[in-house]
Every structure is written in structure tokens, then in C-alpha cells.
Length: 369
Image (cartoon, rainbow, N blue to C red):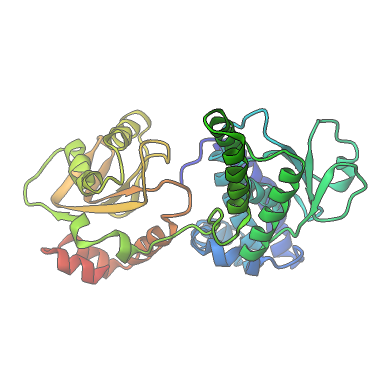
């Protein structure tokens, strides 16, 4: 994962981790166990968090309890979701989130709602006490507890299953439609249609579009596909070469299968090379194994993974030695996590890693993976 606002992430982690270390050391309880709500959808992120806290566990001489780790996982999920938010149009409905379950859970709920309702401008999350003092203008409130307010409110749970999310989306859309505050995308389409057809056809189209938007089985898909390693790293995505080449050429050559399949644009490859030169990004995930990637906005159409096995080590930009090169592409912050986690687990096996480096055929590599 790459984070643009690293300072904010570090502050969030420090604010959570310092009291967490005291809780663990003195056996205090953090509160409700939210594992069942988080782990089914974010197991890959959670597994990475487990590995990342090992230095802290060594520091205090104790293991992090599972439910403490889940809260740290929430911080990463919320931060990645926040960084992918786009600028919102002023005419979108404006909403606030009221949650009494602490900062971490509230932040996660806010980002979950942003993902569920990209048509709504979510301003902030807050406690009930702060809500009654809030001065900004807004239209809607999503709250875990009933509030005394003239604003339209939707009572929600901090952690929702997919069926609850679909039901909530339908409820919110119908409410806005009834108030003639339909979502901007639909409104824009209808304005175009209205200019180019008669009133009778326009009204029928409007009814059909409204119906389409609220049918959960045909509405926005809330589940993102997370292909596993075998699905992404197919035989056609693996290359083994016998000639030595420069590191820039190696990255370009490794990316060719993804370019052929229209998973990335060449801009993505250029960005990878530029980031290495300008920022000296550390991309090693195992000894002599590099995973090259750029941001989700650098020219990615779909999730993809390709591999290049070099005949000998090469020096990348004078600071990394590489013999195995992977190129990873992902259009969002989640689709690649299952495959990436599986790849890291395989490369942690020293025997498999050594065998991959010395493999002579694609079939041999596929068997090891």
C-alpha cells in the first residue's frame, strides 16, 4: 500500500497504539470484539497488520490480542478509503455521521458510507453531543442512535452486512427521490434526455431509471472481486529470459503481458520508473524479489500481476538488487490484496524462494506458486 498522507496515518496509529500497548501490558479490555464484522471482508489487510506489529510485540514482550489488531486494521482500511475519495460536486446532498463507538470505529463507519454513497458529500463524523453543537449546513444524518433533529436521519449499525448495505442504499435513494433530490448522475442523464425527447417518453424513462436504481439485485455491486494468485499469475503472464538487460528495460519487459491484455496503459510503466528514480521507493518483498507498482490513478484498467525471472541479479537504480521482478496493477486499494498476501506467504518459504530464483520453466514456477 502507498499512502499520500503518511503524517496523518502515523498520527492515527500513534494515538491508537500508545494506549493499546498499555492495555495489553496490563490486561485491560478495549471494548467490543468487532472481528466478525471486519475480518470477512478485510482478512488480507489484517494479515499484513499482524506481520507489521511484530516489532511492537518484541518491544513489550507480549503478543497483540486479535481484537486489538482488528482496530489497527480499521485504521488502515479507513485511511486508504479516505485517500481515494475524489472531489465532490457542490450540489450533492450533504451528510454527517453520528457514532458513539469511539474514534476508530466512527472513522471506519464514515469511510464505509462514503464508499456506499459516492453520490453524497459526507462532511464529518462526531458524537451526539458534538452533533447538537454542529454549525455547518447539511441535509442528512446517518446515526447509530436516534437524535432530536428536523434533518432527515437514517438509523444504522456501525458494522453492516451486505444485505443491510443494500437495504440502506435503497432506503436513502427512495427518500431523496421522493423529495426530488435524486442523485446527480441520474439528474444529469435525465436533463440530457429531456432536451431530446417528448414529455411522455421522458416520464417513462425517469420511472424506469428510478426503478433500476433501487433494485438491489441490479443496483451497484457492493462486493469487489479479489482474485487469488493463481487467477492473476497465469502462464502467459510469466516470462523467463536468458539475456541480461538494464533495470528500466526489465520493468518494461515484465509489464508487457499486462499491456497486451489492456490491464494497464504504458503511462503506468513510465510512472513506476519515474517513482524509482525520483523517490527511491523500496519495492523488495523478499531477498532479490521486487514488486513494481504505481498508484491506482496512474493508468490502470483492471487488477493484474506479471512476473519476469532474470538470469542473474541486476542493480535497480543503484540501490536494489533484483533477480525476480513482479509488476502489480490494481484499480483500487483492495482487489489485489488476496493475491499479494498469498505471494508474500509463498516467498517467506526460503526453499520455495530459492527454487523460484533457479526455475527453468514456467510450469516449474506455477507449481511452486
